[in-house]
View 1 (cartoon, rainbow, N blue to C red):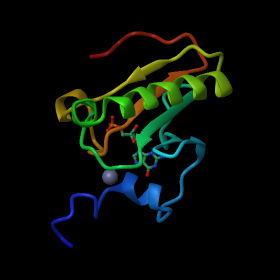
View 2 (view 1 turned 180 degrees about the horizontal axis):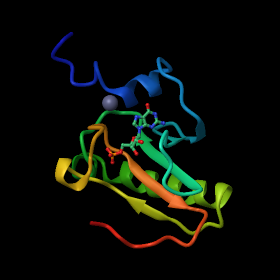
View 3 (view 1 turned 90 degrees about the vertical axis):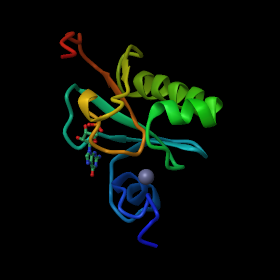
View 4 (view 1 turned 45 degrees about the vertical axis):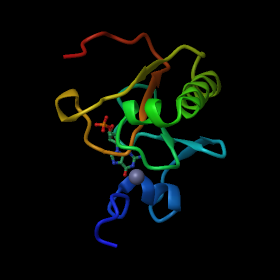
Length: 117
Ligand code: 5GP
Ligand code: ZN
């Protein structure tokens, strides 16, 4: 189905097992895998298994799913860093979003700088 927005989605393919990733945590509805281009000692992506385009769509459709994403970010930071973390959503191209399947970036494992622009 060429009109299916998930057909060419790389994160849907990772979730389906059609592309490999370094998965580090998983629940029924959310997966965490390492970013292919890490920007910190811990840089994981927290991704709902159901395709939503951006974080506002998740919040509108299923706020409990957003809470599950935050909980998994905290768990990953506790297991793979010191429990402290930054959780970032890039929403829209001008904010740096390049994959249009919602994902939160979990960054940790070091003293982080602050240069968001
Ligand atoms: P965005 O720019 O949309 O906020 O974040 C997309 C992130 O996905 C980038 O940090 C990029 O490095 C990561 N990424 C892109 N393609 C892949 C991939 O195939 N596998 C993994 N693990 N990460 C990816
Ligand atoms: Zn997708």
